[in-house]
Amino acid sequence: MFKFGWGQDIGIDLGTATVIAYIKGKGIVLREPSVVAVDNNTGEVVAVGIEARRMLGRTPGNIVATRPLRDGVISDYTVTEKMLKYFIKKVGDKTLFAPRIMICIPSRVTEVEKKAVIDAATNAGARKVYLIEEPIAAAIGAGIDISKPCGNMVVDIGGGTTDIAVISLGGSVVSTSIKVAGDKFDEYLIKYIKKKYNLAIGERTAEDLKVNVGCVYPKIQDVEMEVRGRDLTTGLPTTVTIHSSEMLVALQEPANMIVDAVHSVLEKTPPELAADISDKGIYMTGGGCLIDGLDKLLKERTGINVMIAQDAVSCVALGTGKALDNLDYLDDKARR
Image (cartoon, rainbow, N blue to C red; front, side):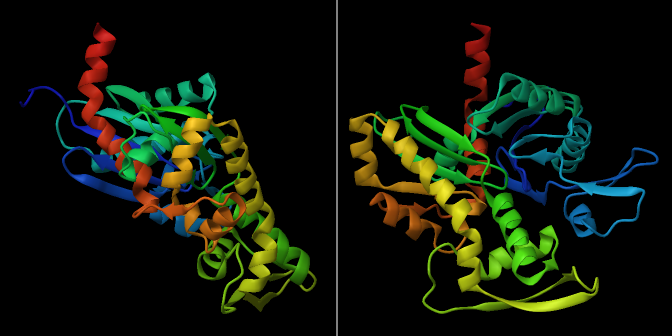
C-alpha cells in the first residue's frame, strides 16, 4: 500500500574505502570511493567520490583530498557529513520528504561512534537513521537465513575493519572487529617496497599492486607487475618489477592477524554452534576477502571449508537493502 508523504528508504554501506547505496525497489544505485576533496581556503567541497579519488596525492596546496573514515569509523565528522549529503542528494528522489536511512557499522563500535554516524546522517538530510551491524548485513546479503537457530560464521573484510561474527536467531552470538583489512594490506606493501627497494609509492599504486599480483598463499605460477615510484636516494622517478612471491612475504603478517582473529572467535563459540559452522563452512564477504589465497590460508589453518560470497563487495549493501523491508516493523515496535 502506498503511503503518501513518505520519502524513499535508503540503505548505505558507509565503508572506509567505498560508499555503496541501495534504494528499496531499485537495488544498488551508487558505488563510489569514500574520498572528499576540500578547498582549505574556503572550506568548500571541490569533489566527492570517483572524481576526488583521482586527486589523491595530486592536489595543489590549498586542496586536500582525504578519506573521512578511518578503520571503519568517522575520523572527520564535518567532511563525512558533507560527503553523505552529496551522495543522498545524488541518489535521492525529488520529493519534499526526507528519506529513512539504514547504515551499517562495524560490530564493535562505541556509543560515541554510533552517535557520530547517526548525527552525520541526520544532518545530511535523513528523516530517521537506523544502524545495522556489518556481519549481520553481510550474512543477509550473502543469502544466509540468519533467523534459524543454527550457527553461521561470517568474516567481512572491508577497507578499514575485519568483522567476524557467529550469527544465530538473527543476532551475533560471538563477534569481534579488528582494524586490519584492505587499507592495512596497502600499508604493509608501502613499507615493504620502501624497505626492500628504497622506493616510495602512493596508496593508489599499492592498491593496484595488491589487486593485480597480491597474494597471501603460494601461487602455482609467479606473476609480476611494474611499479613506478620515487627513488628515496636520488629523488627521481624509478620503475621496479614486483613478483607475487614478494607479495606473499609482504602481506603475510596482516593475513595472519585476520586468521588469528577468526581462530579466537571459533574458540569462544558454543559447541553446538561450532558444530554447525564445521558442517556449513565459513562465509567470507567484503572486497578485502578477494585478495588471492586468503580463503585457502583460512581453510588450511582452521580445517573448515571457506566460501567466498557471490558478490562479495556488495554483500553488506545488499543486506542493508534487504533489511529496509523491516523498517516499518522497527518503527511500530519503537512506538509500542
